Length: 453
Image 1 (cartoon, one colour):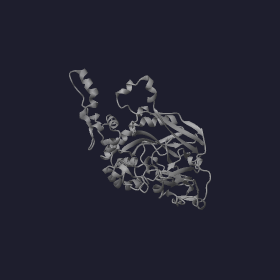
Image 2 (cartoon, rainbow, N blue to C red):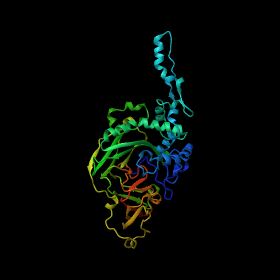
Image 3 (cartoon, rainbow, N blue to C red):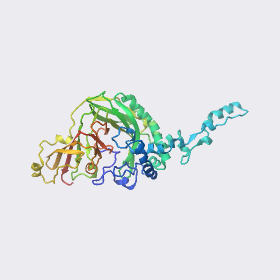
Image 4 (spheres, rainbow, N blue to C red):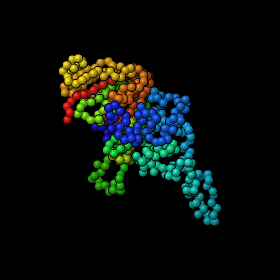
């Protein structure tokens, strides 16, 4: 159940880059190549190299240890750095109403009509260098909807002006989604920031997915409860036939539903969750990324990321048909990896190795950030290890990207963290950095072996 709109998992030994991403297609930023941004445009290198030093001096570090959630992603950082260098928003095409001259005609009625329509005269619609007439604020949203997808992402690569203006236009188009979230979940989930993100889809033909990312602070309203956030949506019609849909077929055109679940604990409590890495022989490269717990544990005052998918391999979502559903609250339950239901007897390495043909080892690869405590083994044809790890030292876990296919970072014990939520029912959704606090524990399961099919 990997997300149909998500990117293909990276190959072992080259995490975070494969397929079209390696050929220069729009891709999410890899932690190993900070000079590349998600647009892949020429101007991005110039922006980062020229302004990153200034940013460090004035804005502080861009590390996720900062609580300023506005600059935790590279696209928002590029926009802020561009605006710091020059006011590109003022360079966008606009109607210069101050240049309108009063009409003095003999026909007073005709003169009044001309005066009322003068503010939309093409002659007073002007912009600076690299700005074109279709980038006027009232026209650009229509153009953006027409270009939505790979063509739109290419527009971000033209120059800083285009990057800033198109990014601002996306904020305007998706403002309705942001306001709906606030009205439904304001008391329990305080929306702090919203941004637009895109990443590659590795299928037969290189595709792309675009999401509206909502970052909200978790309050104590539903402490020690499991919370469900959901919304309904529908895709845009591909033609005029939608209005001719028969009443009997209306049910199949009802919006789809997408939901997220998370457990809320008191502020400062250590969290525990599981991760499962499946490297059995009968699987392909798509399983090289470890699956994480679907229902994410969070603490009060942490930030959660909710990704509203707006464009994927299925098409474009109709923003006007995105409807948030009332918040649902459930009692807390223990969360264990589903593989625990198939295994019962666990042994140490020496006892299990004598009855297994697999080459086993203790996965103590993540020190000093993740300290190894214990490892047990179980299984018959497939050997499964269960390792207990504890977050101790601060910093990025260097081997996690290569071994688990995801980036991990340990933050101070008192620091709020940002936690991306996965859609219910998916093993993999968005491939993002996973943040931990000192004291958090991980149950790491690794499955290996099996026959070749």
